[in-house]
Length: 275
Image (cartoon, rainbow, N blue to C red; front, side):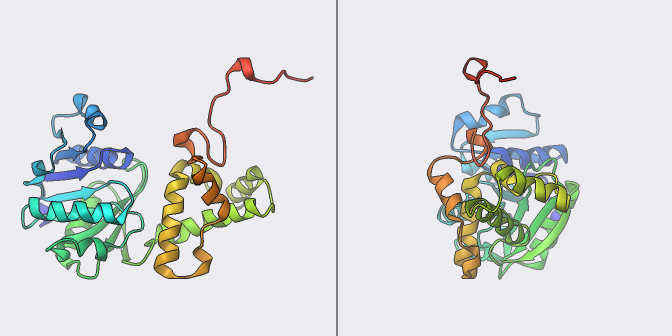
């Protein structure tokens, strides 16, 4: 199946979707980038010839593989997969870039569960070396091999996960981030010392609280809820401080403020320096 892949569809033109589309174009695939928001597709105006932008899902009828990279909501994804199942050719693989949602349940919305698979790129896709490939209960060996081979064509290292909440990376990463929030919430240390301790003590490129800000606190909370529901263990319960920050709209770097403040303070309102 993989050797015939010439056309890739990507649904969702946010940072993940546009990055995945870029990988396809760089590899020589013809890529359709789909988004319901025309403004989100404006980036395609100066795009390479192989990248075509559209708001019509029906343009994916000839795609060999479609990678879904929309909002992290099971209901919304299942609705999309049901629509794609009716539009795409019978041999097409339907892949999801979900970071935590059950591939088996997404596949249940289609008539081709053997051709549904998780293809979880890391952010940003062009730079990060890893792709998690997740097999649903009915994902075929052929679908797995084709998806793995495509990721390797993109220059990625592939790890394979079975279909359990959080897969590999987020099953380990998100509880660490959540525990960092509990460490801040209970007053064990300041946010600066928590991040410095983990950066310098465990040789991580950034601390867990800063990483959460970069991922998006709403995304972290969503994944923790999936872990808590899917695995049924109280150790995955989201920290109340994480919940409060999301409720307050402090979603991280994309909003200018999360655990840390990324807004530039104008010189006119800065306090006078004291010698």
